[in-house]
Amino acid sequence: VKPMIGLNESRIGIVAPPFLARQYIDTMGKRQAELALSLGTLFSSEEALKIGLVDKVLPAEQVRAAARESAEEWVKIPAAARVASKQLIRGEALRALEQSRQQDLDHFVGFVTSETAQKSLSAYLKMLANRRKA
Image 1 (cartoon, rainbow, N blue to C red):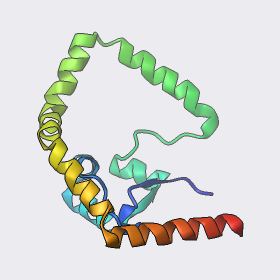
Image 2 (spheres, rainbow, N blue to C red; image 1 turned 60 degrees about the vertical axis):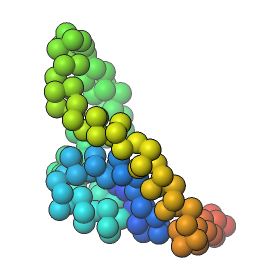
Image 3 (cartoon, rainbow, N blue to C red; image 1 turned 90 degrees about the vertical axis):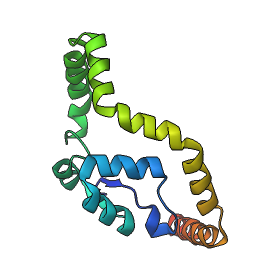
Image 4 (cartoon, rainbow, N blue to C red; image 1 turned 180 degrees about the vertical axis):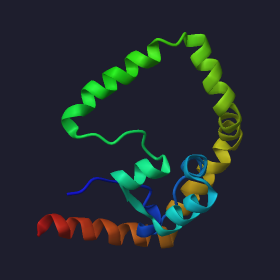
């Protein structure tokens, strides 16, 4: 099975949570995110790397060593500078997430608990159950 990554909620009749949609926009741009979220696109590892959804693509046996190498690089940076840099880049998005948390939660829960979404989820779960039986 070829590894895939993405938010395919629309394919099963629901919507991605708003905070994930905003992360998609920040990562791949508005138009690409709109298409990916609307179509429920799953990306191959190569496609995900190309659009910035992942930072590296490695064979499984190299992941641990690469993670260790990356962590060692990050800890060389003084924590205060690392945190300040991250806040500089992500602070506005974080504030927006905090301000809209309840509204986003209410929207998502309202959508996924709707009769239409529940029917879609039920059909999807049945399909998965039948796939396991086969």
